[in-house]
Length: 206
Image (cartoon, rainbow, N blue to C red; front, side, top):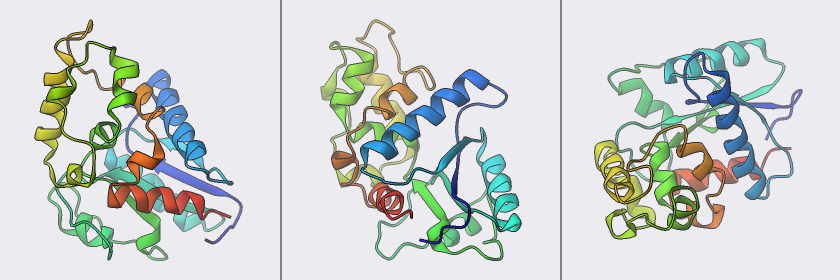
């Protein structure tokens, strides 16, 4: 992995113009990266919308003095790898139509497939640590590789249904999502092919 003047990871999430939520987002991804065993940590930038994340990545790439990476939800089911072809997915997905910018290749783009919530479902214990013992695990989609084949509505419905018996009565993106992500075990997350690709890339940073 190229090391220019460090690495920066642009992440979809953290809300728009919400400093507190952005800070939680950064901390969660930093915790996950540390837990993965990475010896070098990128600076994490919580960008809010996926389009803002892409624009920020392109600006940083054009500057040429650091090695930027982009992490966004796939939004739609994407083929498990290898091989991995992330730019083909965002180039054709309605709502994105992102061209691969000059100087970028497949190593720069990573997916939470299909959504960050699929990463949370990879570790039921992490979810229970945040949502409480009354979380109805029987309503959660099973841990494992099949999570990447489930649609975003199906993933979200699983979390919502399982959380109804908890004290909060529902899963809340933001207050629950980043706290859970910070606790997800990389060993469990690594069962998902796109997540493993991301974690391997973090471990390869030099």
